[in-house]
Length: 118
Image 1 (tube, rainbow, N blue to C red):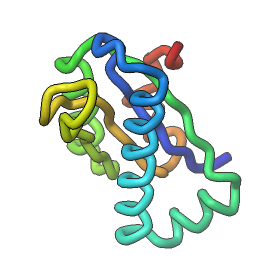
Image 2: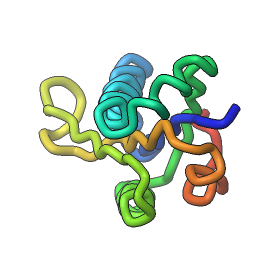
Image 3: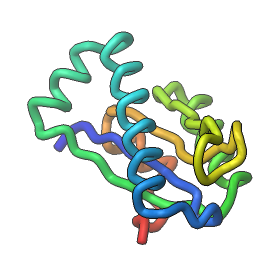
């Protein structure tokens, strides 16, 4: 597959399974919508390929922000998700970063060393 989307989440927040799923969904949707508006051809090709998504983890906020900055600096579409604070987390807590869909190789340059979410 030529394109993929990567969602990176913080492991240190110990979010419930439901909360984690919602944060991943927010990141995926926000990033995909951004790509669709900026690069409609990439978005459509990604969808036609099966809309590949990978969910990875980082240990803390510092590492999440580093991934977000690196992706943005390299010209990838990246979105930072901050929680509204209505349930488990404090308002404004950075929970996830969505990257792409973009070319797999470009995304892997930034996220290829991160472990899958467990």
